[in-house]
Amino acid sequence: METPITRRTTNGPQPIHEAIRKVWLFSNITSILIVFIPITFLEYGIYRGLELSWRIPVLMPIVGICMLAWSIAMVKRQWHAWRYEVTDNEVIITKGVFYQVRRFVPRDRIQHVDITSGPLARKFGLRHVHLYVAGAHGSIGEIPGLTPEEAEDLRTMLVEFQAEHV
Image (cartoon, helix red, strand yellow):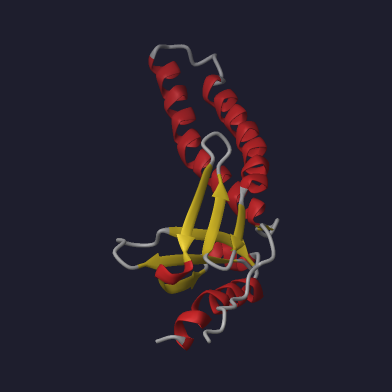
């Protein structure tokens, strides 16, 4: 008689670590500054060229501040939308604020799992888990914002069954 396959699961949807919000926010602020500081100087140069040097450039700083406020609000909503779950048969990744995505990755198709961490994520002690399956070009799923222990436990959970049945 065949014994039923038992696999470790996450016992329901799991959130990603809250510190990922700081990583996303810092990344967004950096992008905004890289774009809006040079444009503000360009706006000032246009004012000088039009002999409006008495005017202080205000349009781009206002737009930048609005984008920063929008970014702060969206990072929180983005974090609330992220969930992952490992069931007996699949990995479910849920994300998205405006366009919500639920990706179902069959556990039997997962070939390997990468754990990565950029410099900013490392500063906050976070890792990203990337899932790769047969026939796909590149990673088909990413779970950001996990502690090193959570990332390693997830990797072990996903590859232990394949290792036993090779």
